[in-house]
Each structure stands twice: as C-alpha cells, then as structure tokens.
Length: 107
View 1 (cartoon, rainbow, N blue to C red):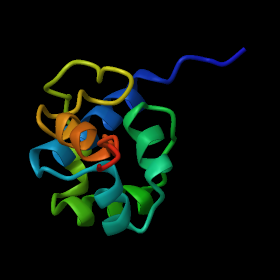
View 2: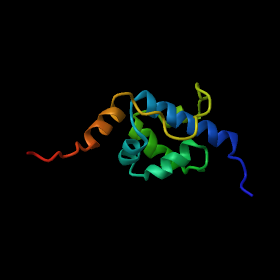
View 3: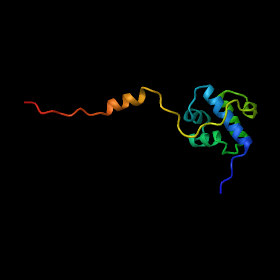
C-alpha cells in the first residue's frame, strides 16, 4: 500500500506549481529549463518526490527565484488532478479541419 505524500513535500510541490504558473510555463518547458523530465516535474508538483538540494537549486534557477521561495507556504490550494480543460476554439478548429467532405460523382 502506498503512503500519502508528506505534507512538507506537498507544500514544496505546490510552490513549484505556483511559481511555474505565475511565469506562464508549462511543466514541459520548466523541465527543459531545469534539465529534468516532465514526468519528474509532475511528481514534484504532486508532492511525490523528495527533492535533493541540487534539484531545488536547478528548479530555482529555471524559475529565476531564490531556493527559499519553495519553503514558503503555498498560497493556492491543492492542484486538481488531470489535465486542465482545453481552451475554447482549439477543439472546434481541429474537428472542422479533420472532417472529410464526401465526393459526389460529376455528370
């Protein structure tokens, strides 16, 4: 049976997510900047990783903050699981572009 993440790690993860969102970065972009995997960033933000000090430093440099920023109390509540909803307009344009127009015989 898996244990619940430690509250301290959950708070650090929330701070990473807040600081990332404040800079309009995706998890993928933050991972690229910090030279980490996007999956690792997901686990950090979920409180499922016990980060090393060097990893905290890499994240701080990627987010352009002091490492101590991660130790402050998170301002927002827990993240909602799953993907955020798609922006309106993008789904509709994809559907329209993927529809085929039936060919009708000429003559």
